[in-house]
Length: 380
Image (cartoon, rainbow, N blue to C red):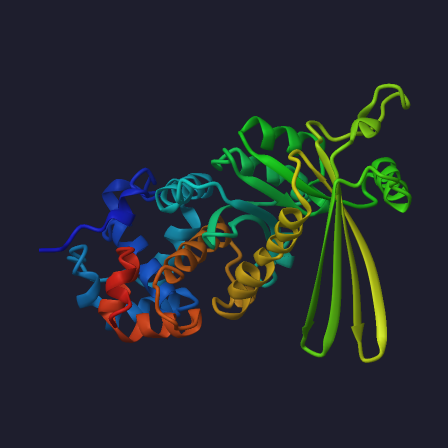
C-alpha cells in the first residue's frame, strides 16, 4: 500500500482547475511528480515526464498512479492553471512547519527569471520578490511583481503572509518606504533598511550627520579581510540618538521613517591590484543594534544573493526556464523554492548540485528528502 506523505497535506487546499468529470490524473499525483523530478534535476515538463516514466515504482510508494502518468502537455496545462496566490499561501503554510521558533534575520530581495517573457503578447519576464531566513537558510515566501509595477507594491503583500514576530527584516533601498516599515513593525518585527538617494532629504541629513557626528556615535566596529587577492577594511558606526532626525521642529512635511531608533554607517575600503576603492552606505533601523550586530546583519542580507539567487541560477537553472503562459512561471518558481528548502535539509557534506544528482540516482535518498528526514538521508 502507498505510504502517506505529509508534505502533500499542506497543499490539500489547492483546487483542481480541471472539470471534475475530465480528471484522469489526480492533482496530488501531478504535484508529487513535478516536485520529485525537480528535486532530481529535471528542468522542464518533457524531462519531468521522462523522469516519471523511469521512477514510476518510486512514485507509487506514496500515491497509486493507477492510470500512469500524464503527458508533458497535461503537466504544463495543469501547472499553468493552478491558482498562483493559493499555491503561494500553501507554500508559506508548509514553510512555517519547518521554521524554528527562534527569531531569524529575514532578507527580502527581488530576482528576474529572464527567459519567462513573451514579447509577442507584451508579457515581461517574471520578477519575484523573495523572503530568505538567513540563519535557517529557508525560502519563506515569494511574491510576483505585477507588470508595469515594481517591488514597492509586491513587498507589502509578501510581508502580510510572513510570521515576523521577533525577526529583523532587511531590505535594500527600494523597500525603504513608510508603508513597508509600518507593516513590518505592525506584524511584530523590526526593520533594517538601506538609505539611498530615493529619499533625498533623509539621505542628505544622514550623510551630513556622519560627516561630523561629534560625540553622538554610540558604538563602532572594524574588520579586515584578505581574500581573493584583495584587502578589505570595513568600519561600521551606529547612532542611537535620532530625535534630531524626527523632530517636528525641523520643517513641514518632513520625510521620516516611522519607529526609527537607529541610523548606521558602513564604510568599506578595498585594495586590489594597487587600486583603492572607497564606499559609504547608510541604513535606518527600528531597533538599537550594537555595531557588531549591525555589521553582521548588513552582511547577512547579501546571503539572499549568493545562497538563494545564485543557487537558483546555477543549480536550478532558473534563468533558462521558458514557461511563459498563465500562472506557470509563478507556480514553478514556488516548486523550485520548495526543492531548494528540501535539498538543504541533509546534514551531509555534499554540495547542493551533488545532492540533486544523488536524489536522481538513489530513490531512498530522494524519499528522505521529501519526507524531511535528514538523518536517514545522510546514510546514503
